[in-house]
Length: 261
Image (cartoon, rainbow, N blue to C red; front, side, top):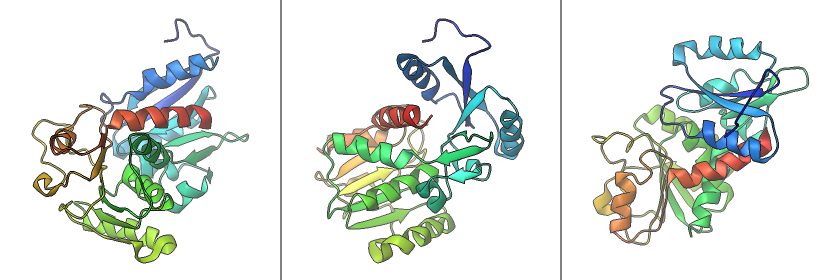
């Protein structure tokens, strides 16, 4: 970690609610230090009702160079970006923003590529596979796009909010047509299963899918970092599945964040 910082230190702020589970402040600060940057990452817990005012206030701080959005602020961050990457614009979601030369924000969404890199490193193959995504929120939206761009044959999307599911399917169908369809909590036909929901963070959370229908050949990935091995991943490993944890995703996203900033 940085042993000292001063008024010259550049500040990057992570916005979330809750925030205590987020690992990025220490990890990204260390990565900045490794790259020779005088910068520190600070977590802030801001409620959804206050996120607009919070970002507006941070925008006025000249030594704040970047914003990182975690649950539930990835959709909100887009509204405060003057410019966006193609994928952030397409999905309407962003998890990082850096300053443009005029002081406004440029946003991007790095979760999807970070997740796809992580599961590929753990042995997941994409081409021609059938994927089931649980969760159509910010991270889920980005992961959906990354899976389709890497060649999955079909992507089924399930969300506890059917309207949110249908919005994501509608966006993706513009590019990928009938390769995208509604899914369910039954993973029996899935070659790739992704949990992009918070289910598994709390000990009494229900499983995101019916694990009794999970096949041994299915690759299972989770976005949750605490606990690192969620009940879903425990059940998948007990059935012989290859898996990737949310920490694996986090490590890949971390490097992409440092590159972006």
